[in-house]
Amino acid sequence: MSDGNADGRVLVLNQNYEPLNICRWQRAITLVYLDKAVVVEADSRVLHSPSVTIPMPSVVRLVHHIRRPLPEVKLSRQSLMERDNYTCQYCGKKSRDLTVDHVIPRERGGRHEWTNLVACCRDCNNRKGNRTPREAGMSLLRRPQRPHFIPYLSFSVMRQALANEVWRDYLEPFAPHLVPK
Image (cartoon, rainbow, N blue to C red; front, side):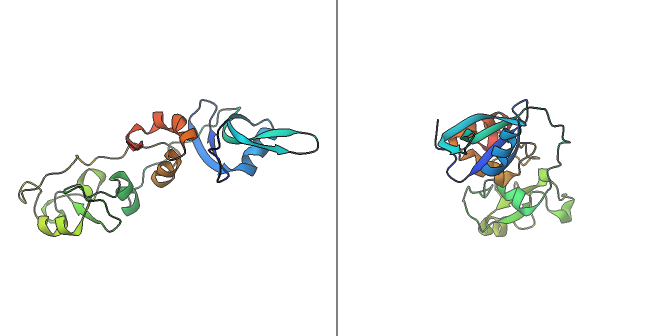
């Protein structure tokens, strides 16, 4: 057993092992006690009551499959920055103080969509101006695209969750592009 649950959060998997949610340990224990979930991974701590002993869960799997519609990835500044890992897509500078750049400027027919937006540092944005990257003599580190993501967890939650080594094996198949190198 590992100690990957020090903060009291538990990864909840669907019956088919698809990640669904992250909840507090109290909710996870309730699901296990009511036979709605089983403990898949536990840490070294144990919860004792007068009549039962339950290992402190780190990952639980639901007994019955839950059907949920796949959520739409909403285009927002935060999700764009998460997609680009807070890295300027022209020079590679990492920063929390980035701008959003339209690869093809809006005035020139560029659309406000995933495939035309990138995170950009202020210096590169000023250098590029109202030109295409080719006209400005710049190139993108990677082509912008609609993000692939784990269906039920947001980018920021997913990035934080991947930091938990116990959870990583359950999350990687659903978002290999977000796994820290």
